Image: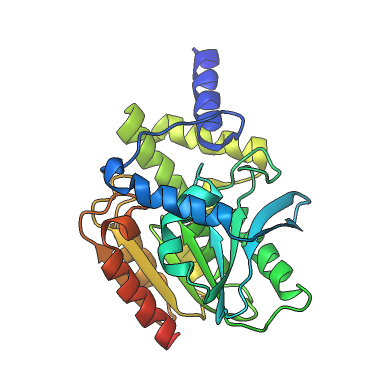
Length: 294
């Protein structure tokens, strides 16, 4: 019995956090309506001149990113993708707004994803420190124009940039957080219940202990609100009202925890990470207002 329970915990750990276990999730929402826009965005990312860049994480991993520089740029955006996402897929649709030549773009491949090093995903507990590493990389870049910097993330990437918000962020004028969770532990508690019909005790609690033993990461340390309490830069919170993976209440809780200037935008009918695709006009209006006043 004990051996069977151990194997179940190990399975859930590998399912959630081990890059060597590949996952394929069914698309959220009506993907056929948006797949052409995503395809065009990926083409834009592939066709424009880019530089594959690298920085070193605090714990010695090589992290990869894709840097797009434009002579007429007025701002720089650093973008971080979601849990088991990828740099081009998660950012593709956003090229409709950020691909106008007015933004230099650094689109990051998170640790334990894509071409970056690392085996285990840290659910923001590790990744928010990678945000700081990438910001340091950018600030040290030779011959760069001194432009205002914005951090943006989707899902786990959004949680990561919010968790970095309480740190010193030289040059950063604002943060855009799209569908961030409130607490990494709660994500797996809710996901386990919804997808596998398992309870927090004993399985999810044991999963967290296994995670601490295997990686040193306590998922309960991934409480975004704890970090947001020291935020000093403006934040735009965006969330889909129909998000079945990370409920919109998470955005509301994060919003309340943030003492800085802030804006909350909830998108009707949008599933997880689908807000820009579902209502591009509302999203762009929010971005324009945010950039005007931040």
